[in-house]
Image 1 (cartoon, rainbow, N blue to C red):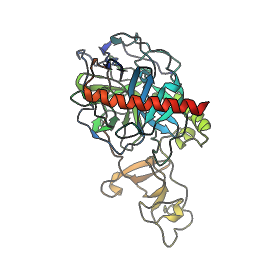
Image 2 (image 1 turned 120 degrees about the vertical axis):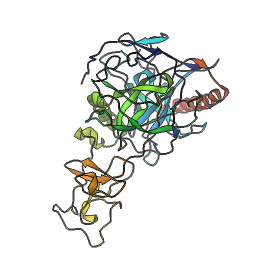
Image 3 (image 1 turned 135 degrees about the vertical axis):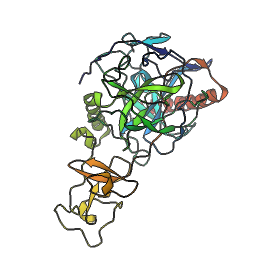
Image 4 (image 1 turned 60 degrees about the vertical axis):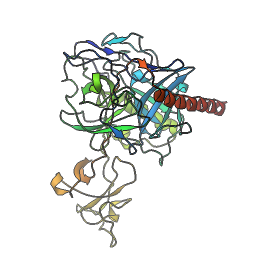
Length: 414
C-alpha cells in the first residue's frame, strides 16, 4: 500500500531541540497544525499524565553517536520489532520550522546507533536492546503523512519482560473513539518526567482523510497531551491495540497528529514477517491473518458444539489451552493483552457481560473482556531550550548507559 496525500500543505510549528553543551536532544518534529492555530514552541509534557508502570510494551528509544543523542518513544509489536516515527530515526532537513510537502527526512541513521529500554524509569543499568535494521517507507521522504518507521532488534525481548502490543491494521480510528497516550516525554512544566507516562480517556477528533488542511490522508488528529519526547509513541485503543504513532503536535501539548497504523498495513506486515524469520519465531496471528482480532481457541464449552466440558471445568477468567477445559457458555480466548489464553464468556452486546466488561470481536464470535488499561501519552513537537539540571542529569545517565551498551554490542559482534 502506498498512501497518497490528499490535502493542501501548510507550515507547522517551529522545530525544537533540547540541548546542553555536550548533548543535543531532538525529540520530535512539528509539521502541521489545524487552520488558524498560531505557530508556537512546545515545551509541555504529557499534559495531565501519570507515571505508567503497566505498558511494558512501550519503550524509550534512544539514538546516540558521539556527543549527540535523541530520545523518542516506540512500541514493541513483535518480540524483536519496534514501531516508531520516521523523524525519530532519520535526520531532518535542518530548518527551524517544517513546511509539509517541503519537510524532507534523510536516510535512516545506522541501526547500531539505536538502543531501547522499557524501564518505567530508565536508569544507568536498565536493560537495553540494540537494533540490527531500520526500515522506513520507500515511497517518499516527506515528514507529513509518512512519519512511520520500524526497527528490528538484534535480539528478542524476553516474554516475561514485555508482551508485544497488537497493531490495529484492519480498522481505522473513528471520531469519538477513546484512546490512551503513552510516552517518555516532558511534563507540563517542561521538565523531564524521567518516567514513562500515560494519559487516559482521550478522544479521536477526526479520522484519516477527513481532518482537513495540514493533516494528511494517512493521519488522524487526537485530543491533547502530546509533548516533547513522546514522538513515535502509541495511541492505544480500548483493547490496548496500537491505533496510531505520534508525529507532531501543537502548542501546549495540543492537537496531536498521529500516523495511522492501518494506512501502513502492508509495510508493517511485510517487516513483521521478516522480523519473525530473523528472530526464529512464528509470526503473530495478525501477520498471517490480516486481522487484529485473535480468533478464540477452537474447542468445546461454547454451547455451539464440540466435546462436552470436563466435570471440573474452569470458570470465567481461568487459564486454558482449549475450550473443553472451560465451563458451559465459555470459550478459550487468546486476547491481545499479555498472558496466555483464558476462559471467556461469549456475547452479542455489552449487556451480556458482567459489570466492567465489554463485548469485543474475536474472529467469527465475540467475547466478554476487560477494557485495556489506558495510558498517558504526550505528543511531540520539538522545542529549543536550555536543558535544566534534572533534564541534563537524566540524559547523562541514559547516554552513559548507551555508550556502555554500544561497547558491549561491538565486542559481542567481533
